[in-house]
Length: 161
Image (tube, rainbow, N blue to C red):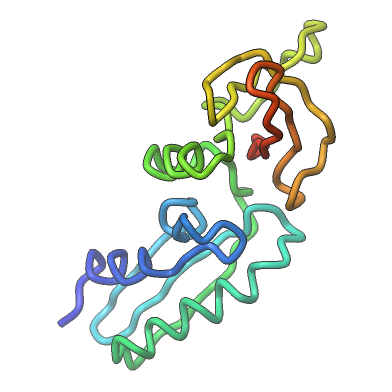
């Protein structure tokens, strides 16, 4: 008999197609796992409603369940509540940093602009806080492009959602 923990472990083998150093569990995309006898149900939520990777993620989950000989399964996509970067694990944030992507801040609500301040994003390469945004859009829609004023390297910042 397979357990919910077994399924979570299996799903941690599914990489995020846009950031393959992360898996869909670390990203917080997998919301729930339910095992009732031989039936497995996996609930996923897109990182944003127009995420082009969701079909690939669903197909990758179905494939890994088939490979592990799970016979009766279903993957459900739910949109509410909306995914938030707050659901990313600490391991995911550290992996982002190690690959040169500044991880999202701990709090998804950015009130800095309301207070006349600019959000301070630390460079993932040298840890300097002397950085500035070049573009609101980086390599994917969920990232912004920044540049470090100290090491002069450009980097993506995974936006808070």
